Image 1 (cartoon, rainbow, N blue to C red):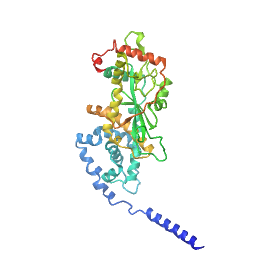
Image 2: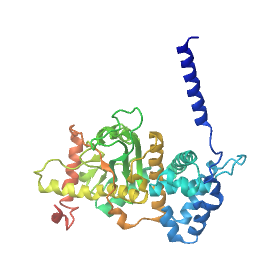
Image 3: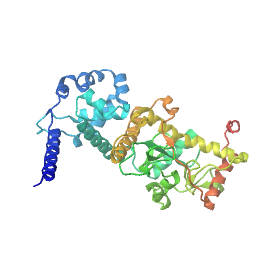
Image 4: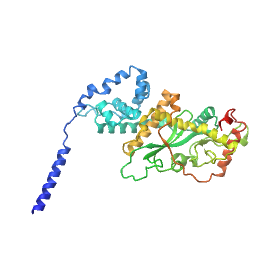
Amino acid sequence: MDVIDAVCLWAVHRRMRRRRQMRERKYWVHPILKTRLSHSLYVTLYPKLREHDEKFFNYFRMSIKSFDDLLEIIKDSLEADENAIRYCISPQEKLIVTIRYLSTGCSITDLHYNYKIGVSTLTGIIRQVCQIIWIKLKNTVMSEPNKQKWLEISTGFEKRANFPNCIGALDGKHIRITQPPDSGSIYYNYKNFFSLVLMALCDSNYCFVWVDIGGYGKDSDSGLYKESTLYKKLTEKKLDIPDPKPLIIDNEDTKVPFVIVADEAFGMTENLMRPYGGKMLSYEKKIFNYRLTLARRYVECTFGIMCSKWRILHRPLDVKIDFAEAIVKAICTLHNYVRVRDGFNYEDTLYTPPLSNLSSTYTGRHVRDADMIRNKFTNYFTNEGKLEWQDKMI
């Protein structure tokens, strides 16, 4: 062995020793975490919050009853390992840190100091709870509508938005994320930030009827919609949508199918209505666009309510992409769960969410039948279905 080989061997040995020393943990349990049973907010604050309904709601964004029922639904999937050497974390505590993370947008490091739980442990807990919330709740609070449910949604839009035969308002939003490793530019959108896409169909009660999460930020509304399960089932007639119904009772000439309303980014079909394009529009077309906007605003308000309550959406999701998708899925299901059980504040419907609209790249032609259907709606809105104040709004 010459001198060079000896030096190289010594350098390798030294590097391996340093790496071994770095791997050695300074503490089995950090002194800060040892105070968890006495100083964690789970011990010091949570019991006091349960004594005051309003404070509990402000802290967890849901009532005590809703929290307890949610815990009952998911706790069997969160049961702690009773054979663990160290004090295990209960399902209740796991749900608490997850709801706090989603509702405030605080960092996992902040939760680490407040609840005296390790950062890596918290990350695993929050990921697990988000996944379980989606699995356990989605078929209860966001089940695929049957014919009767579609009719109820339509009745709601006719009553609240004065738009008959409407079974939902559709839109998509960019959810900010940090750049995923080795992703190139597929998540980089036209607003110059990284994002994944939430596509949602909402009813007039500000609830999600259907969501699609995980589209690339670079994609447009129409492109993502055509790749969605909603579009495929709609075109294949597999959504159990009721048969067409006249806009005017006993007038078969006004019969139109049940439709979804969306903005100009989407291509128009027999079951999806979009505004008339262009600037020099006739009176009739302006009225139609106004009436469609009244119905479409419900999806914008739904996003606003969701972001006002679940404030992690106010910042980029600095987690892996599958974790980010799990977070958004959990928030959508929690939005419906809390909305149905606890209601909402009217002011939240006026809130402008920190989410960006998707780009519009649709340049295709409408099918002829879709144009005829839109014309029937237009004729109805300017005659038998006219609102006394609509002329003042265009």
